[in-house]
Length: 234
Length: 234
Image (cartoon, rainbow over all chains, first blue to last red; front, side, top):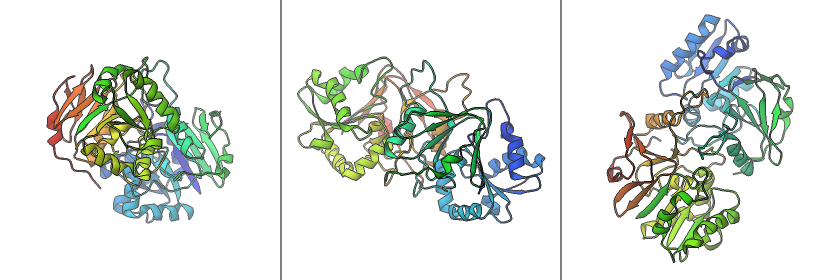
């Protein structure tokens, strides 16, 4: 499988996908047809138009799966937004099974934020609010571990009493013995032919049960994550 | 029904429940037996001991439902933590149905954070990570609207690209036509005999579909929320 999993689609102060545009263009390939999955946001046409505006100048033809399906697509891009809404619609439309078959069959898969959550075994490390109820939390499972997109370090001096991201992931690990890769904004994970590499300018943070969190340097080979065991609680 | 729904159990720089201790004591009643629901955290005994330390000096006897059930309880307190874990365990233990019967039959219900989420029709406006999958998002439904605990205003100058709380609630309202009461930390909602009143020093923020958010002043009568229509998306 060929995967490009972005932490986020928009970096602060930049245009949509601008921070990763060369990487995205090289991954999808100029001259390719990209099937865009817009279900994480409410307005599918508008969201597809946003992606088209960003990628067509790079020679990529963008089609919304809500109108055109996967037919003829060289690559798929699942965009960010609310991951519960996205997963519900993947089940509702039957696209979840279609995507699993297509990507295992060679169609390239790119995700950003909620779309990156979908590439994991489950939805369980999303940051999103559960605004709708998907029939299950099982997602696409293109990688065997979990990713936390938009990973954010604790803010010094914060007086808000909601859990930090690190506390949330510690709670995940109380219930599930599954590695979690925290991808900071502006970074991504590239999986190619059984190898996994960090991309972007920042380190990632790896969380495992019964071990202190560990920084993984920008650009590191993290292929070991592709063969670690994972045990989800029911 | 008699309900006390706290945004949070610990305010910044204060001891557990300290910011609301007089209100909690008056609600539960000195001399009462309180059944504590510890399922939102992993260590049920330790969590019950924390609540006991806070409330026994006020003449309240605290028993964990994981050891003592609801028998003989005058009041129930569902504590904060992870609301997905809490709801899963309410289903798993059968306590969800027991609690619904008990509270409708006169047992007083107090919640904090995740425990306040439980008093709503669904889990859909929690802030928590979906670390486990409950069989459904339907919660206890003691009030007909949704509450967002730990409500936090956008941080000026924030460069993190994750959704603000207000954006998350706007996405909820895209999918569900249900009022959401944002309770800022340090505040609560008191429901008594068909009337609802805001408590604590800060205003609350009300979100409704197709209307701008609205500030509701500290101490306000918000009984109108008990009779508004609610329509959840599937």
